[in-house]
Length: 416
Image 1 (cartoon, rainbow, N blue to C red):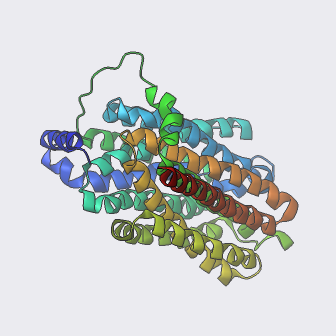
Image 2 (cartoon, rainbow, N blue to C red):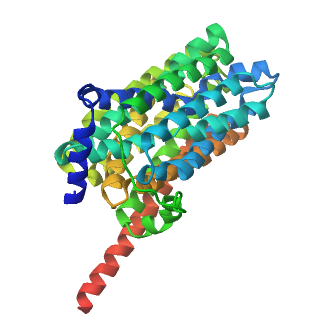
Image 3 (spheres, rainbow, N blue to C red):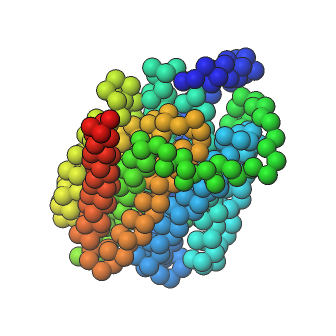
């Protein structure tokens, strides 16, 4: 990292209280888990929501896609502000907005009102992506990926908690109580994290509040590594999202459409997602040692192997278990590698991180929307086809551009 950044790190460290410096990373990981859970809160509750509104689970599956689109929109608007405004104030405000939206969702009288509340809550749930650049900037260079991996482990733990605890609590107390509980946790952890963050003194930039958003296209164009990380994670996250957001439909479906499990039992299936939390620290060490490219390549191979296992899992439960572990391990390894690359490839890490995460969630939102429709018309096999197509698109697009770039570089060298 440049000397100027190192000096800034030193000044920041001298302003931090000792206890905050010691527990800041674990607190950020915990806050990340809680806030990330909000994005996936509706997915395991779809059968309960459908029953409450007199509909079918497949007819309300689009609400899960709304959450991802909302998160992507929030990232575009709010995450770049990490380069220009005080994170403490922004984290506090967004946490309170997300909590209020979740309470409104709990009081919703219909799917439209619920979707609107989920959209706002997800748009405000960008706190993890405001904090990851801070973690990467403060970490020693030889352990940067491992520090980023700690936050990512918190993120995936939150996703697992949303499915497992959300399903259990929803079965016991109703889906509305789950939304209220999530609102309370979001407010408390968000405010606590905001209080613990280091104080940042930044010069006012009149008229340039959203300059990071305007700079997104040029930042991506100027960095081939960032562009590659964005596209590959969009493919990986899209495949995972198509499978994971549709899984409740398979597990709770009756007759020939699924296994006929209860919402609570289906929610326990999310425990297989704990593989992601275990893999994250390992992936961080591998990235620090072998580089991001090798880790991403291995993750794509693992994800590709999981797709036929998921298809077989439509009829054989054991295959579904293995596939769930494999796809989570692939997703988190790819995420650790690609996000570390995104955070270190430009001089504006918050803006680069915004481009990276928006690309991932946009890919996930589109894939999950297509998967819901595919499940309705073609069953579980259609969902697996969407996941496989997303992996192919994510890899071949970047591979084609990498080949073109290498050819141009070779031609230019020969001419010189």
